[in-house]
Length: 79
Image (cartoon, rainbow, N blue to C red; front, side):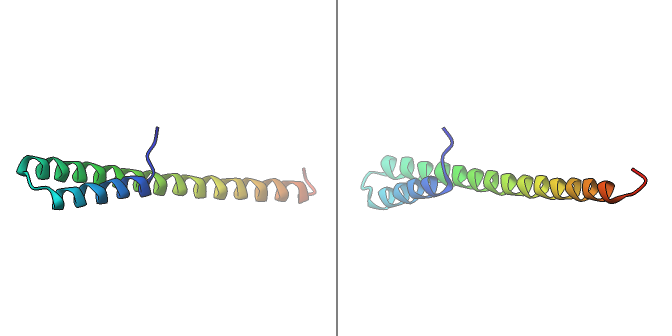
């Protein structure tokens, strides 16, 4: 299951808050590691969204160019 950017950020914020509240050093360190991991997952999700959007724009541009080429061929009296 893919995690959303927002979900990962929320979990990272939660881990940071728990680390700040921790009285035991090992609990604080565990929560800081958790926060770091969630921030990394959030960044990964953000990059995936950007790449997906970039690919969709490229596909849309390619489809538009193909439609234009098809329309030009239809208007060409030689074909």
